[in-house]
Length: 85
Image (tube, rainbow, N blue to C red):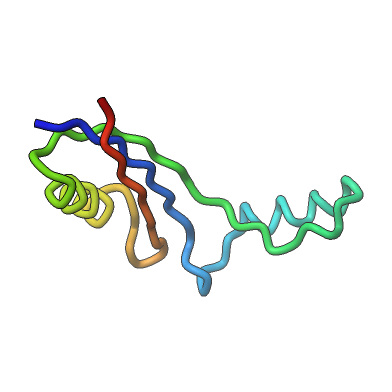
């Protein structure tokens, strides 16, 4: 078995309103940072997985994202996978 590290980013879909991001965007103006606009806030998830191959690990992480870590109606996700010693 090999060990892998997955770094997953889950973000609201572009067509979905992001109230938390909108509030942070407004606060940027109050801080004199009006150049910063359209803030979107999501979540970052790190996990370790043991699998026989990179392909199997990818499939397992993808399944975890689809079934638990992301709400596919409102969120999208991306991930990077690397083998660790």
